[in-house]
Length: 501
Ligand code: BGC
Image (cartoon, rainbow, N blue to C red; front, side):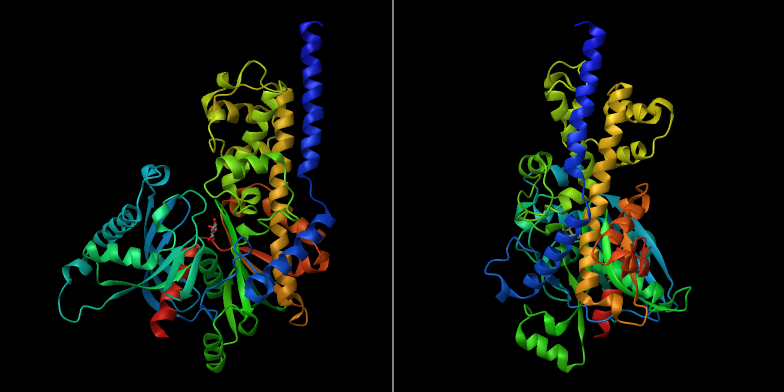
């Protein structure tokens, strides 16, 4: 066969193989029905220990001890600290009492050595957080140190947003169940993260700061969304109600308000006490990243299995997150490309795996940002894709390869957005929110770079909601609102609640 014919044949084979992969990533209405029904079942099991013998790999459904929604009239100045995927933020938040707030903040990148090294200790991580807090106080509130030790010095109330699964036993205490996303520090597991942070604040001369509330980023986002909007009228004159807070960023997760009487995992005396105080609902942090860890209904390709088993720090857990969140979309594409290369279907100029550019061989080096550029590339000959691959991976590509890469990108992101619709539909159904009022309009406060920046992500998610059991009617009544940076302000709202409780 001539070289030209051989080349054409390889092109055809690549396209045919990508056709097959595309099919494996597709999700239709039937799958959405299954996923939604299974999510509802998983929520019930997670709330009620009697329904499942061992829920250790099930949906965590964590009670947060947040029993009310802010209405926007809250006032006060509070501190907030927020440990997310790659950054740590310390802030002082002024809640103005009119749905608005002002924030002063110091944002720091988590140093690589705290992420990569298996030998890092909790003390090193929390000492870093304390040192950044100190730098913040020095810069924005030097009077705090000037007044240190003086009689009557008031303590500063801090809310701590910690965006990892914790077993929460009260509004201000919780032990880490497991790390997700980028951290691996073993000795933090099972420890109270508030105590670890408070200890370091004290040791670094900041005992005037008291951490009074621990919250998850989804809960923070939800509370901030409630604070900013409250129950408010939509353009059609309907009252629309905040129902879910969620994140689609490096990780993914969602929270909602559940009836206290349904939260059977709460000790009975706690449940009765709350009910006798007139509390009816509590925010539940679902930790939906861990939905269907048993893979009963989750669509699974060999790439998902490899990423979970060989490349992630928590194999067997957070399998939904590994198909949905921003940390994994680029990694899925990278795995597909390496596989196609091993079968001589793509990038054939590199004869062996070893010859591939280093960045293509290195896990998590293909970022979701690159995918977002390819997703909407309509330049001639997919020039934008060509440049993105050259810049990010030092990888030259042919036009046919780029066409197939674009198809892969689009099907990976669409699967993520379609999967994202399932827990949302499930929560709306379980809570009956779409039928609570005459027209049952609901709001979802969402944050994270997929929702904010990934081209078409929100439309794909909406489209999937329409295909899900809530149908086009439910989708129309669901308002997906960006609640930017809500996670940190939410910690301040929690701290306010805790200090006035
Ligand atoms: C964590 C959640 C968090 C989500 C979004 C997940 O990996 O388990 O606690 O809310 O990421 O940041």
